[in-house]
Length: 251
Image (cartoon, rainbow, N blue to C red; front, side, top):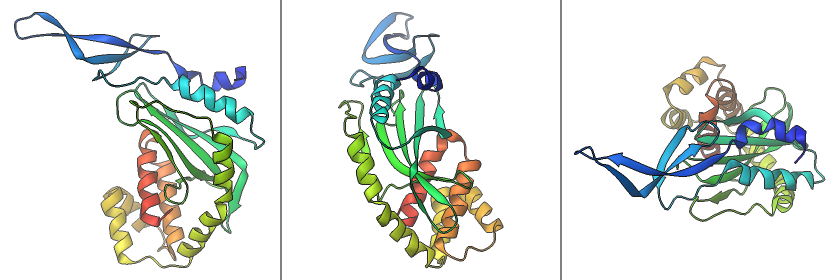
């Protein structure tokens, strides 16, 4: 990994460690909690979480460095994309975008993106999703149905040794994505879908959609939603919203 990339990812790769958990009982005695362990930052001793002893700690560095090494071996151009990346003590999401692996929906280019997730509080395991980023407005998209996704629980370990194959297979599925987009570009918005937006994404999102010009098809509605998620929803919440939208529209 180059110094430039290392610098860009420095905030993601803070050191973490496991520590023993002690507690004070009702009589004021200090006891060791054998079934639990604390996850802390080594650089500032911040307590991140208390997990079951079976939890396997996978530092961000252990998945980011192998990913960067494989990216450097690819023929495809790629960039670390800050538009939907974030890192906190407990969770992170890293977006890598492939500008040359793109398609056009009739309005703008949409480039494929990879989203790498990890957490230290058990909220999610190591996950890698494929999606895209819209060129003209940085709308983030997750293609949870038409593209394969990778998932590993923290108790089972991970492998990231087939990235080149995944990139190739994902690019080959662009016609499938475009076909699905063509379909929803030619389907109106039924009342049931509008109701599902409010049920799945909440009244605030539904109110935003209602304030926009009536969508002439489902693709317009989809882009209303992805714009809102990408520009209004907090970074750490975007992935969950994007997955819900993916399911709603069969993408």
